Image 1 (cartoon, helix red, strand yellow):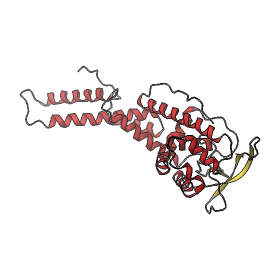
Image 2 (image 1 turned 180 degrees about the vertical axis):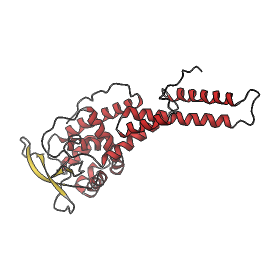
Image 3 (image 1 turned 90 degrees about the horizontal axis):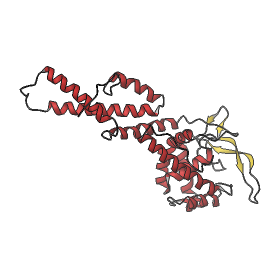
Image 4 (image 1 turned 90 degrees about the vertical axis):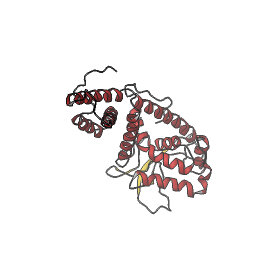
Length: 299
């Protein structure tokens, strides 16, 4: 195996590791990949060192100098193995670090209040998906539906996180599914503008409505799951799996949404979510790949 001399950013350099850790905290996806590769290199080097130390006796040519050269050679091997696909450990770490970052971001999700804003660019939409993904996957298991469907519904209800109902001072309600505060709701609530459609048809009108407010994203998602499970008018939405039309149709019939095109918009948003998740997965595996825009996105 041929190898080139390592530079000052060698992956087993602990000073370099600290610098990359600072980049990870700054939300740099490329640094997350570098840290994961660095950890894989450290692990590989430790494994090689342990294998050499496990030999029962010294050879005729063994000396302190030969041990030094062997250690340097092991570092070169560890560096080479950590590059490219490596042992696969780096890929697992990238996924875990990304999920942890998304979960931490969830409790600081900014509220955008009411008003019109430009559609979120694909990069921000991917950030929204990463944030809600772990919550949506758990909720999907409880409701018997696809996580893509729940992510899409939250994106449709909030404009990809740009229009989360908020109190004065832009305090977020963490209400990602547009759940309104009816007469039976005893918790906190915020008032926000929303678009409503008359049963007789006609254009949408902007009205002020009370929305439930939560202390965290998790609390909001839990309440949404409970709402669908306990109200019989939404029972046909449960267990619909990947059938977005059946899920959205059941919600519309139950009065969850007044938009006559709600099902079609939800289906188009699901297609966007699937495309963006596929793009994000490919980017994590190959950070150098250019991002793509998902077709048919609904803002």
